[in-house]
Image (cartoon, rainbow, N blue to C red; front, top):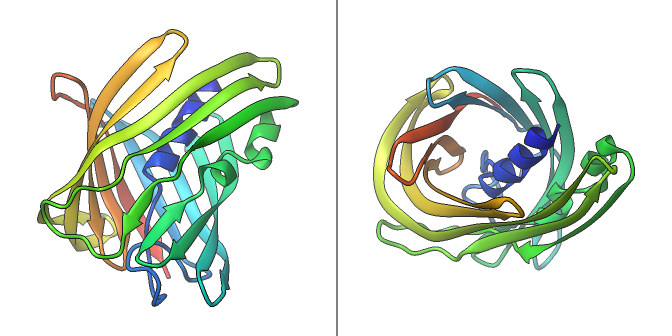
Length: 230
């Protein structure tokens, strides 16, 4: 279950962005009923887990649009995490709320929890261009999960940059994408791990593919959009 907890945070840092029919957002899901399924693979190309997102509520006001998504993460070796989290479209960017991602619905699966969550929510501008640099993001998680284990962790996503445009084909279709590079640093009590990643991001669809690499540039794992329902 501990590995699933960490995976849920990483999925949050790379949370999906799909079906943007709202005037406020080009990439993030702002339409009720949209659902997306992603499949993750290990470095050997074997299926590791799946995660399904559904847009379950959209609220609009004069200054912003907020969508609530449900997330169900299933590990191939067993174990399931479920959670809801919010996306807010305000001005020219969309913001993922990490505190709602790591909410009590998910934490409650560990029993009693005493966890403090802080950070800088990840942001994505509506207008992307090759060479564009994006703002850093991070989340701090500290405390105890159900008495099973203690958590003292910081996950940072830095050096975010739009590298190029590229066409990508997955089981869900063929998409014209921006390729966004970033470095992720995970600091825990046992040490620090750094890896880099690229995500392929399509307008009106969202993330269609993602790859992670170790410090030597070798593939650690990948994720791709396997189904999309509007």
